[in-house]
Length: 162
Length: 434
Image 1 (cartoon, chains in turn green, orange):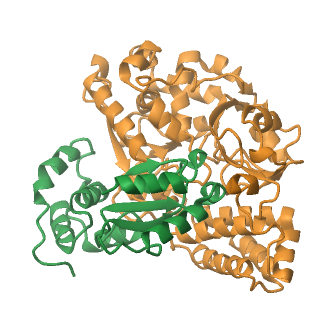
Image 2 (tube, each protein chain N blue to C red):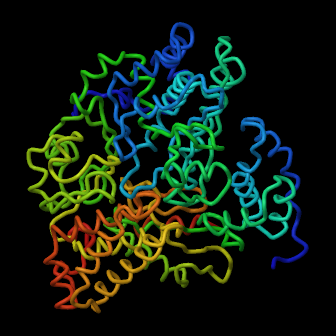
Image 3 (cartoon, chains in turn green, brown):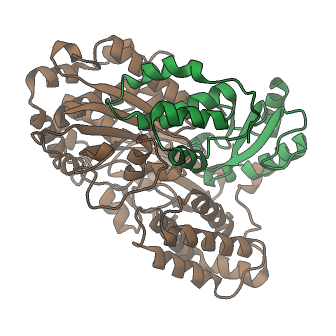
């Protein structure tokens, strides 16, 4: 359960209404993913009260939203660090040093994959193929791709991320 | 040079992705001509005559897919561009989204007219931030210029577009899972029949084409089917965007005319293998296609027929170059870990089978492999084939059987000696140690 005193996300409603205009009428269910994404952008994660609101606002069953949140790997029900480092470890990235990079990040930050640093600055995750194989290895920091990474470049980057 | 260029035929600059530059290259003239002088069915006829095959991986004839849509059935029709590029090794559609988004939009408008679609979608993978920004900005430019909306170019044709962002799911690149995702649900694939062209998005006739496939539509309408067919090979007209990565000196996206020599492409155009190493093998079209050894690619032309004759496929154009000395057991481990992670869990053979295969390869890699493990991997692969709603389980099996067929000795060595025959290397040693 989330803390009860989180701010409401209902101020996003006008934005969602504008979005609806480009969808065929009567299919508000389609807005489930875009609404959740936008809420997560603002709040950092999706809270219980956001689900309550979308059930009511979009008129979709609660289970549909719960399923979406557990099915898609990008949705979060808990906050992550200020900087979310998602390191690709699929075929092409592994072939260009991703394993060494993940070990380096883990040592440097003093956390295991999936953990957040004690100061809340960094969360380290691994992901499967970011579609950037030609510039491997790739680390996605929040929404931004950092390509052709190595230990020196990642150290320089970490220094910039306050 | 890798043959004639149809898509990557302009220099990339700071502004080449924007509307004024696209218009200066002749952009949106085909749309105007189509809307003012052609009937919808004329467009489908032209695209069918072009003989273009789908560029997403399955190489299905585009015209045949479109022909299922009945223009006079009184139903709404939908079009979705599949930009959920997630097949490992594949990053070619990203080039179009980032550098030529208006080519995709013009092509989608022409396709919407041909199929009488009022609402169309681009389903783009959630991680693609820069491509999304570029595409969404292009959509807004196109609306402002009157290419989308209630009355396109004053012709009375109406069309709206939504760029729909995924949220992290490989399976959503499968067409039926993709539309289920657009409906706002978890991305479970659907059983066919009914085909999606009969009952797709919101239970209506829907065409789903890959980004690169759709982007060729405006090109075909500009050139005419006859001229288009002069590019490439008779059974593989046009070009393929190939994204090449791994142990290669010049990774990136290349437009390759079908029929171009595959070995020349890798050794010359892409600069050959990293660190001056010999070539062990390539994965030619996304990790779900079967590996081809250095010998397999000798003298092979890069087109659908020749690639099949050589034992693999063009696939998604996602090519991975693998140097001599790379451990194929650990490489398969990376692949099976991925398939296990991405199985959506709907069908038992894939949900359980991916887990079994992942656990078997994991214990081999840890030095705990057992006699019979190799046969078990092959048996699960074969047993999965054709038993699931979508092709993901099959794809994992193809990749596994393909690698074991060519490198069985490495697996046997690993199990017998509890260590890799190739020191467990995934990287090229000289490059990693530098």
